Figure 1: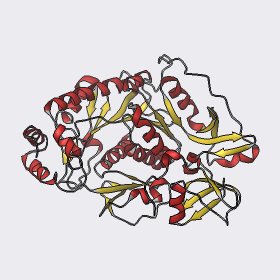
Figure 2: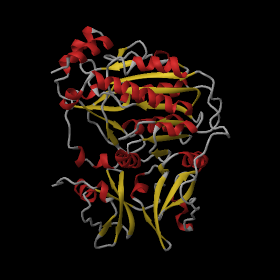
Figure 3: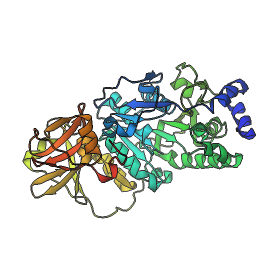
Figure 4: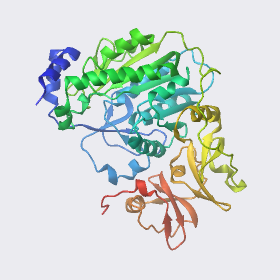
Length: 461
C-alpha cells in the first residue's frame, strides 16, 4: 500500500502522470546491475550497458555474487543503475571544471558508505587525470566505516583516503575541495521496491527531519569547497522538500548557483528533469530511484585551497616514522611512494599526495590512505592482502599463480590451497587474470593470507 501523503508528495515533485507510472512500478521486482572496474581485468559479457554509465551493466537475473571471484577481486561493484547517474553527473562536472589551482584534483565523497559512489568517482578521476587526484571517502557512522574501507581497498585505487568524521570537521579545510559529492541521508523513497519496511516507516515528519538534517550537513561542509567549486547533491528519494527544495535553499543561503542543466544537458530516456535537478523514478527507469543536482559555489569567500590560517587540530598520537624497505623490495610499486609505519604495518602513499595526506591527517580521523604494504619479519616482508589488490603494485613484484574457479573459491573461503607448480614463497593468487590475494607457498601446502574478515562464509560446494 502507498501512503496517501506520499502520493501527494510524489505528484507534486514529478507530476501526476509521471507519478501514476511510478506507483504501478513499486510492486515490480527490483533490477540488478553492476559497474565494472576499468583498471582491473574483468571479462564480463553479461548484461546490457547502462545508458549513462559505459561501465555499468544491467543483468537479466541476480547471480550468486558471493560465489564470483571477480567481485572479491574488485573487478566490479554491485550498484543500482540509478545510483550510477550520480557518477555521470560527476563526470560532467569534471569536464566543466574551471578556476582550479595547480596540484591534484581534490574531491570529497561526504557520505560514502558502503562505497558504490566512491568506487565510481575514483575510476572517473583516474580516467580523467591519471594519478593527479585525491579522493577523500568519508563516513561518519562508525559501524559502516569498516565496510567502506574494505570496499575501497578491494577496488584498489591508492589515491583514495578513507576518513570517519562529522561534516563539521571539514570546515577547517578552507577551500580544499574542487568538488564535493554529498549523497545525503534521506527518507529512502528509493527503497520502496526493495524494502516494504521503508514504505511502512515513511512519514511527513520523517521527511521534515531529513530535510533539516540535509541542510545542516551541507552548511557544515560548505567552507571546505573552494570558490567556483561544485557540489553534487543527491538523495535516493523523490519528494521536492529533500530535493529541489533543499537545492533552492542551498543556493539562497550558502552562496551558490544551481547549474544542473548547464553542466549536464544529456537527454536520457526516463530521466525526469525537475526545475533544479534530475529525478530517476521506478517505472521510468530500470533502477530503484535517485535525485541529483549540481550547485556551483559563487560567494567568493574562499579564494585558495588551504590558507595558512586554517585551524589545525592537535596531532593524534606519535608521528609516523619513515620506513625503508630492503633493497630487494624497492621495485614493489608502479609509482613513486613514501612509506610510513602504522602500528606494525607499513603503508605506502603515492609521493604526489604526501602533503595533502599529511594535512588531512592533521584535521581528520584518517582510517586509511594509500595502500597497506605488509609487516616486516626481520628482513622479510609479509605482504598485506590489500597490496595484491592495489593498482600501485608493480606487475612483476611477486610471482603469480593462475587458478581455476574451484581453487579461487577455496582461497576466498580460506581453505587449504596447494600450488605444486608455483615457486616457493609469497605468491599472488589470480583468477582469470585478476589478483585475489596472497598465499605463502611451502611446496606441499600453502599458508592462506586471505583476511578472515573477508572470507566467504557460505557453502562453496
